[in-house]
Amino acid sequence: MNNNYTSTRSQKIQISAKEAIKKGFADDGGLFVYPELSNLKINLEAMKGLNYQEIAQIVLEKLLPDFSAAEIQASIENAYDHSFDTAKITPLVSVNNFHVLELFHGPTSAFKDIGLQMLPQLMKRVLKKNNQVMILTATSGDTGKAALEGFKNLDQTAITVFYPHNGVSKVQQLQMETTSGNNTEITAIKGNFDDAQSNVKKIFNDQALKQKLGKNISLSSANSINIGRLIPQVVYYFDAYFQLVEQKQIKLGQKVNFTVPTGNFGDVLAGFYAKQMGLPVNKFIVASNANNVLTKFFNTGIYNRNIPFLQTDAPSMDIQISSNFERLLYYKSNEDTDYVQKLMSELEQTGSYQVSAPILDAIKEDFYCGFATDQEIETTIKNVYQNDNYLMDPHTAVGYKVMRDYQTTDPDTPTILLSTASPYKFVHVVTKAVLNKSFDDDHEAMQQLQQFTQLPIPKNLAQVWDLPILHQDVINQANMTDYVLEKVEDHFHDKN
Ligand SMILES: *Cc1c(COP(=O)(O)O)cnc(C)c1O
View 1 (cartoon, helix red, strand yellow):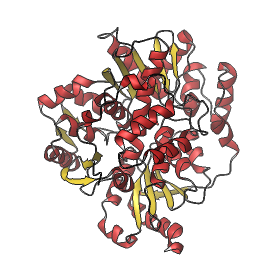
View 2 (tube, rainbow, N blue to C red; view 1 turned 60 degrees about the vertical axis):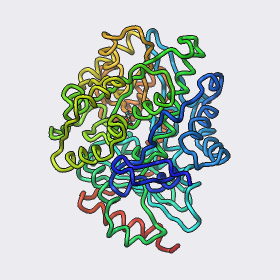
View 3 (tube, rainbow, N blue to C red; view 1 turned 45 degrees about the vertical axis):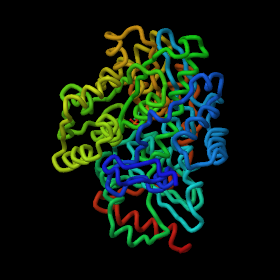
């Protein structure tokens, strides 16, 4: 058996990649991790000249050792061969004096597509004939739609998405409400993203519910807690690096920095995986919005979520509990699962924890952290458009601002800024910054922005206004478990 994965909270748990993808979460409430990543070193020379799919093949074979090479190849083909609007999948664009890795060319115009076009392909190859899986997803806006597009109409699966009522952009909400497919369920909940995420976690740990579902129906997750979503994201760090080599901006072996707009810490953790596997990285620049729990952690070693939750202009990062940070604590404590278990139960009970000084120092060796306010987001979008003729979305603008802060101490290392969404997805913020105008109607705003910038609107966003609304539920947090049960009955009952 290839039981390569374990839990962040207990070494006793040993599980294959396939089982880890099927389950999503570990039974002890921890997250699945691959121990000793440095054993998976990649030969960089051998990656030279390869395209995205070929790089993906190498990375995924390493991290998913119980999938056959043919299974991985077929998954990559299905995930990336037709649903992206560029053959490069994640093109690296060099603007005057910075480099942007555009991660938003997939079917829903956010970087989540890269993981979520792949996860269903992997899931499909994990399920046995009589298995049925309900995918549960808490979303701050982008994961929901990307997961729905990935899983819709996939046999043996159904998907339920929970998003914060009045907590996502108009475009994001419409994208979800208009989702077709015979196995898709979407509901707003009265609460914020952290409420949605912690209730989903509770549902996963609800033993009585598991009993009711029986042995052939299970629950899994499409959030970045699922390794099947996280691991595909490791690929574009390698691919970006080689694009920079190809553009002759760097020499093979030279170190670069990556700036990552961060919420749940999944994207940047994938970068850390790449570094452990041998990618030459100096620092990861972690950029948050005004929900700056992580910046405070970097300054003090104290992770404290007992502060007001803010709704910002970069809503996909309105998060106080960065789930994947638990994985980093696992690696940075030298895989001390008892220690992680202790910190996580403190977080659950008191809303905060403090790490030891050596662990904080070890984290700072690889990461720098900062944040941007809404005002800074707007100024950044406006200035970068005016000075460099590059239009960025609010999340990317958060990254840009923090990258510039960091570069005052490290001006020379080439730095790649990850762009996580199309500017049209958060059009009200972008038009305010660039056109200095507020629109009541986002559709109108989109057209005006297009006229002004001449930048094409991604097809899925141009079309969303004309599609019928198919989902409009709003429920209380307390009813999430019942909602899941009801939807399991609807979708799976007949076949049992
Ligand atoms: C999800 C998201 C992020 C944050 O990514 P994490 O993996 O949660 O840190 C940043 N920007 C956009 C547009 C997103 O959708």
